[in-house]
Each structure stands twice: as structure tokens, then as C-alpha cells.
Length: 207
Image (cartoon, rainbow, N blue to C red; front, side, top):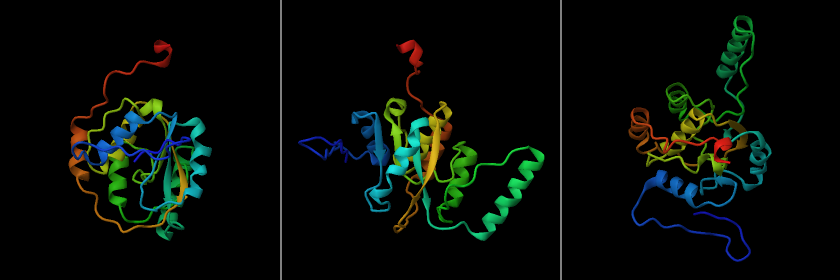
């Protein structure tokens, strides 16, 4: 469901002739949306609409601002590990890594590690599924995945193409979690044969 707000119609429902999965729904949303900024969000009450302005505050200098699910304070073992890592980075490399915006919980931590290491997505919570994005950057990107990995696929492609990403801590109301279907099948497909669509023309050349 897509909801550009107007005077006469506040909700627009798009039906697919055949099931295309979540990836197909995201692809359709990027094709038919007609506003410079698009908010993608799950319709399951995991997030409070009152927290959405946090994403708008962060979008000015990036292409995608997405939620980092905030479930509470970081576990003590993670705080200790980060303290040691920061100390080592400061002594050996002369810098301190960016702090974690929020703690999304242990569930899915293995997938998050895989996404960060294998696909190079520099985010702490790439599966939050709450984005505010600049449509111009993503409109031409094909979505190969059909399951929930489609979110990760788009992030990986945007990052590979030089897009800017940032995370904002957003309170998360935990819903019943089920293992994402097709996650690893779609991940393997995108890893082996990534499709970035037609060559992109820089803004200076298209003007």
C-alpha cells in the first residue's frame, strides 16, 4: 500500500497480477512513488508514527536514513567489548569507531554480522525495515530478491554505488519474530549475480 497524501485520496492500493513477494512490492513502490522523499515502513505497529520526525531530521545529508531498533541498553558484554575495541583503535589507528546508535537485540545478530561482513553494509541494524529515502537515487535499482533480503539488497547496492546511509535510534515494539523466508537463497543470488540495472548517468552529464 502506498500513501501519497492528497486532498481527495489519502491511500493508494497497488495490486499485482501475480504474487511477487516483498521484493516485488518494494520494486513497485519505487516505480510508482512520485515524491522526492519516500517513507517505507512495516504495517505491523512495530514503530510509533510520532518517532518518524527523527528520520526527517537526519535525511538532509544522506540518501537513506533508517531506523536502528532501540530495545534498551546494550548488554554488558557488548559494552565491555566496545570499550576494548575503542581503546585498541585509538592506540593503534588513532581514531575511535562510531558508537552504536541503539541495540536491536540478540535475535538476528548472526544475519547482521553476515550482512556487514559479506555484503559490506556499514550499518548496525540493516533489517529494521523502516527507511526514509531519496527516491531519485533508488528509482532505477532492480530488486532481485523476493523475500525480506530485498531490504538488505537495496542497502548493499546503494552503498556500492556511493550512496550515503545513516542510522537513527527509534524505539521498537517487538513483534512476534519468525525466521525470514528465502533470506539465504536471495542472499546467495545477489552475491553471485548482482544486478544494478542500466548504467547511471552522473547529474552533470544528464543536465
